[in-house]
Structure formats: C-alpha cells, structure tokens
Length: 336
Image 1 (cartoon, rainbow, N blue to C red):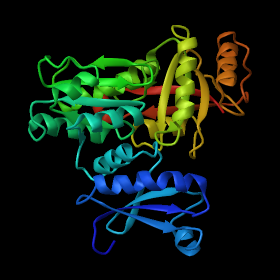
Image 2: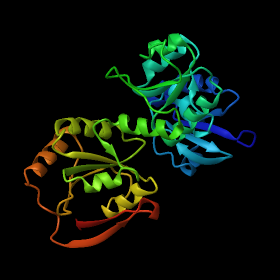
Image 3: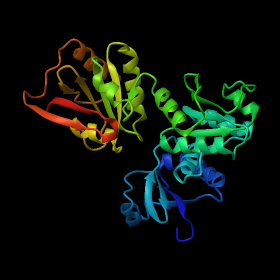
Image 4: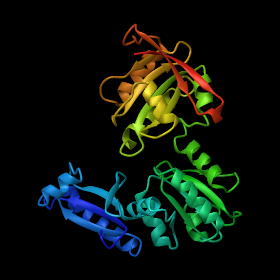
C-alpha cells in the first residue's frame, strides 16, 4: 500500500470452501487490473489482529483501499470480470471495454444485468459521457464496445446508428434500448428507470410524483449493496400488485432525499425494511419478521384489504423539507 494508490485485499481462511472458490477468480482479476490496481491476499485466520482492525467478520471479505485507507467493501458476484469492472468504476477509470468475443462471453456468463454502450470510439467524448453516467449508478456494471460482433451478441443490431446503448437483463433475456440524447444525465435517468422496471426508485426528481400519487404504497428500504435477494423478491411482489400498489424503493444510507425519507419513516441501520404507506391519511405499517416472497405478498394483500393494524394510536406531525430548488415540501402524518 505504501507503493500503490489502489489496492484491493481479499481476507481469507485457507480452510474456507468459499475462499478456495474465490481465489482463482481473484487472481484472474489481478491480471485484468495490472497497471491500474494491485490485488493482495491476507490469511485472516492467522493474521487475526489485522483482520479485526479491518472489521473482517467472515471469509472471504474483500476491501478496496485508497492510499492505505479502507474505502469500500465488495458485495457483488465474485467473478473476475465483475470485480475488475467494479474496481475500475470506483477508481474513476470508467466502463470496462469489451474488445473480444471471449471477453463478451465471459461477461454474459457472469452478470445478471448490465449496461452496454456501442460506440465508434472507446476514448472519445461519448465514452466520457458513459463513464460519467456509470459513476452515478454504482450498483450496475457498465461496459462499452466498438465491435459489431460483440454488440450483436448483446442483442444490439450491429448496423444501428452509434452511439447506442442498452440495459440488458441477462437472466430474463430482456434488453431495453436507450433512445435519448447520449449524455451522462439522460443515460443515468434511463438506467434508473429500467433497472427496477416495476419499482419506483426514490429520487429528488420523482419525489413529488411519489408523494402526490393517491395509490396505496409499499416501500422497501434496503442498502444498494448486499440486498439483491430482497430487492429481487420485492420486484416479484411488485409484479403481483401491479396497478394496485405503488412499489417504492429507497436506497438506505444514501444522502439527500433517501436519507431524509428514511429518517421520517423511522428506518435506521442496514437491515432491509418493508413499510406500507397510505398517502391519503399518512398511516404507516411495518412488516415484522423475515422478508420473504410469501410474507411480503400477504402483507400487501392485507394492506389492500384494510386489515393492517397501526403500531400505535400516537400520531406525530412532521415536515419533509426538500432543498429550495425543488420548490416542494411535503406534510407527512405518520403513525409511530
């Protein structure tokens, strides 16, 4: 770390099955990141004090250090292409460039969803706009290519006018084509709108529409990293109640509107929470217990049928004040 600005460290135990599974992928990622970041491994079972210092509570744990300071923990799927793309994004190198079919096939096998830009030049202004958009959406891996063969493999017409961009949900085999102006803000808005197609991800831009929507609402508060399972479950629930409930996702621990709304809803910490919210009377109901597909569906059904009991008769009047440039503030009557 004294010699390298960016270092990713894998804390492992030599007897751990998952550590053994990760080791070859981690080594392969080190080769992909050569000259950009250094990767190192620490036997945390032997180096207990070092592991304790860096809050290692299980094996394997991966941390990214900037200038010797721990900055990020890696939570995504532990594949070499995903790890290298994540590191590049964190150190502002930008999207991962796909130049060969072998690379493209590995990425398709490793990812569940991604963004791909089909460009004329991987070093021009369009690539810079794509890189800037990727920094706004750290939970999605961004890729770029100038290869027509690679583009076709990712469901893009190789004869399409460039720049072109898609959001690809690989498991479902669904590709959403971007039709806007190729700018960082337009790309970020597009990806935000399609990555959870049945959910509204709360932002400053859509907060007014959410709070003025008369539909009963089901809110998921969950961190951006490490919550993919519960987010996917919530998406399934959103499909069940499509047109009946408005599903809203709040990325916990984010600054701005998400932080303020989390505070107003009494949500703290990192544990995902599901809350039913009625804009008509301001009542809130918390789902207790494990967040499973069955429990959330049952909770939503009871909410629609007015069968939920409030946690308390005490009502607190609170104001959600948005920044002055939004020209909006909202009155929330909340049962606590």
